[in-house]
Length: 223
Ligand SMILES: Cc1ncc(CO)c(N)n1
Image (cartoon, rainbow, N blue to C red; front, side, top):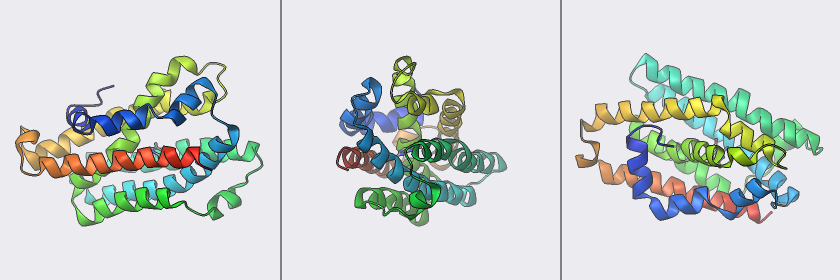
């Protein structure tokens, strides 16, 4: 999956961490069903809390955007997170006897706190593009994982999870976000983004968020 032109360059600059993220043992366990159910539910509860703060970060992006079209994509992502993606978490947890109140009251693990608050701080202390560099590994990494795992989904134990990220709605969000990044980068960095003095720092933000994704999967394997 390319999802635009800038994202592949950021991904290449984070290469070893990116591979550790999208090919993590947790992901392989989702693909072949070997992931213990307890680890999956533990992850899903934490991920629900993650998405609450992640939606806040996309809402911050609405306020940092420069055009109506950018605002529309960011607001659409807030909507997709709250009304589509979190539905998976609420429904799957309900089947396991974990109700919405229990989900909302769960205690955040430090790995979760570190990641979400890092992303929010990248947005508060930086501009629109700094925030997008911190948001990108999450959105586009799950898009890449979903697309890669899609052939394994039919009949798989974790097929509903895979379908959420492999589905056309989520993949459309990824395509929109890739284009959003390209447009914001062209405006802030000019026609050759990698030649900009800001480039290294943006790569570093993307790399840090990618490392925090690896930490999130590690946490998932250690209920
Ligand atoms: C930790 C994490 N990263 C990315 C996504 C995709 O939205 C998610 N649900 N959770």
